[in-house]
Image 1 (spheres, rainbow, N blue to C red):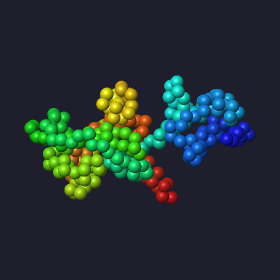
Image 2 (cartoon, rainbow, N blue to C red):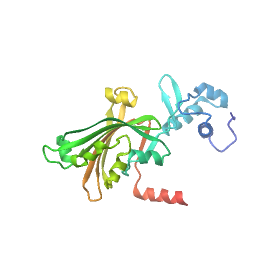
Image 3 (cartoon, helix red, strand yellow):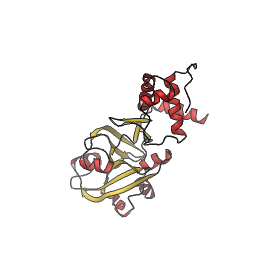
Image 4 (cartoon, rainbow, N blue to C red):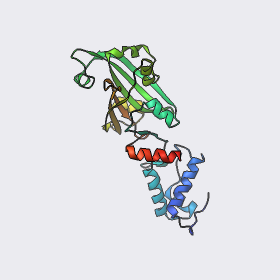
Length: 251
């Protein structure tokens, strides 16, 4: 552990931020590890508690640390980061982020279409839908409770291994999701959601509803995703900003 350089032009709180980040990157501090208290940091680095508090606040804001009321400050689990403006399957999102995706099938059945299904899937009254409910895991952590509805013409899904990527199964049948419409809001964990996502009942969760279409604009499916925000970050990036960042990455 190094003392901070009080003669440096870099602010002490920023030096402490860098020290904590380096400890995490080196593996000295791992996800779930509890950090020292403000008093212990102050003594170890010979800085004021105000300096320590400012550094911790920045790292909490960045999602690197997490505070648990009455318990302490911990290294946060690394979140899956997704650009919400791009329609991409969960499996692909995990792989791009160098994480391991997996799924647990909760149920898959043929059921009557609701009024919402008729509207969103362009169905006639009396038609059926394929309903697939799954729990999605990222690096073994339950991250998303997902419910997909498909028109009955996609009944081949019921004979497939639905713990694999749905989009890969669809592509095997020459069905490609090209775009869609997305709505994001907040919901509060029900008893079932709290048990499956391992959060407290009534905790705030992200609610994402998608209507996904092919290149001709025909609806393929709808998807309702209840997401644990402690494990999942949604970013919104404009097309111009994305082009600039991609150019910088390639330079």
